[in-house]
Length: 77
Image (tube, rainbow, N blue to C red; front, top):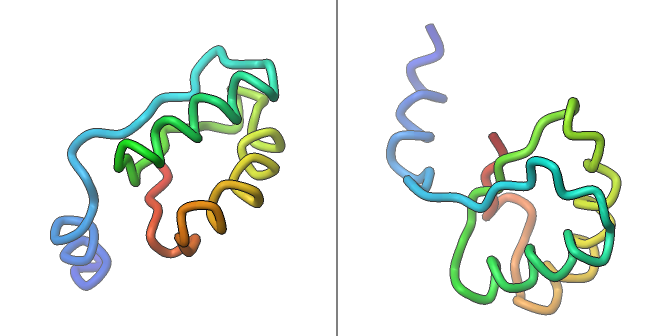
């Protein structure tokens, strides 16, 4: 068991995140993530089977600099 990784997640991973299930429109994804990051969300629930990971990545390329965030400050599950 990776106890170091487990402890890292337990100490820093937010309890509440924003979900992206069934959001297939790239503009809607951008707007949802924009609101979430502005509000303070730092965990994004996503999965390959949602088929929207490209749109999420594209949105984050624009939004991370907007909120002065780095990729390492976000959690994906």
